[in-house]
Length: 389
Image: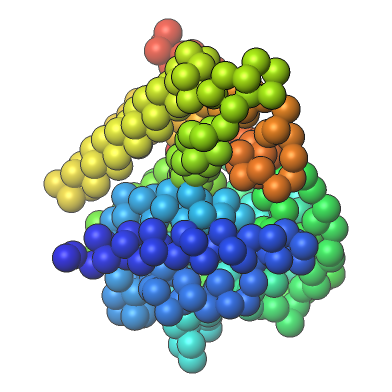
């Protein structure tokens, strides 16, 4: 068995355990320390981490397959795994000095994030003063550093300079504001930073990520780190939707296999509406998996050949990613509706997946409207307007 297959098998074996722990995690509004420790022990956070730092440096498809498997058991666990583990990829493209600061003493150190560019930045000698409040920092309680987004001031007429700033736990506070109906256990609280110094080497230009020419490429030259950051990150928040749809389908079949309708007295499994909802959900899941796997295969093959991924392809990949969330959400909606009134109860797992996939769909990166309009406009000859590709 390959390492990739072994990792997926470990995740699938954890599904019953994740289901057992879910109620307590929902109550705490946090995935448990024990679950994060189990992910560490299983090597789940190492998938995108460089080998030189003890990671596996595997392809992003393995990362996605792992998220899908975890999401079948607990969507919140899959969500925080994805948005934390993907940071091991981004730190690898930071300057070597930043990598040493985070991983030098402990390469298992985790980083949370909030990329919304809301920070106030003041350039100073050797770096920047940074202040602000960033929302939706998933899994932040389990992390010792954070990535936050902000624009660095530029001369009038110059292109905007959006960057990721890397900040240690001593320099920020976490404000417990996470009271939601979906992805409840992700602990996606606010991060607050009050006028702290961030040295230049602890920043990463989005433009460098777009061009696939980042400082970390000097010490981490593998093809994995020559992929576009935008393509890697957006998959970390969209792929869980595929696993949620599969989990919802699993729960739908199990719940309705022996159920009898209270309204008609008929077996639900013989209801054509229920049968079609299951069939269409499975077809949607398969289609999304195939498109996403094809896109990653094309990207990896292009980079391995020493070539740049065409912008037209990157635009299409970006739309496919967000569209997969839309399609999976519609599939879960149909399963929820076909389950009747019983699906609205909190203890019905179909309802949990229904709530969680709608929270997933609400993420900015998972809204297909912008990527879709950009793709359509480019198809008609307009210029690309999205640089998070």
